[in-house]
Image 1 (cartoon, helix red, strand yellow):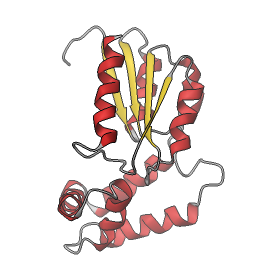
Image 2: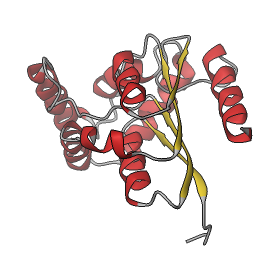
Image 3: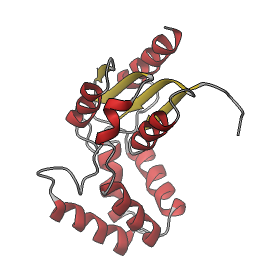
Length: 186
């Protein structure tokens, strides 16, 4: 819509899979691909995945997502940003409640579980930077490493910390921005 001929593309978390697919479909348009906290294979398709736990998460979403009581959403919040603190947890809990109905959240969670762009990784032509927090509580660290290992010439950066959603000023966030600046300047 902005009518750029070529641009850098960022994909975070589940958006990484969408960005990978776009970069493969439009190699002439994507100059740089930046992936953070991403995965190429959704939870339902991962070998050894605990599908029983994931099904339980969907039940919790269905039962408590839209409630004024943040108990169910707090489970997700602490996975996304365990080190953030109470004020940020409350804000994310409320954002989750307002941004999707329980039904929509369940459908989304199920769709994310079915993601599979593994076969596309070797087809990525754009210069690629992959970053992942070492102790990410939402998307396992090795999934980011697998993406980087499967994209020819990709650079992988391990970030310190535990938060999947980076917090302003934390060392991982500072390094994240620094790495992006360096990558785009090269």
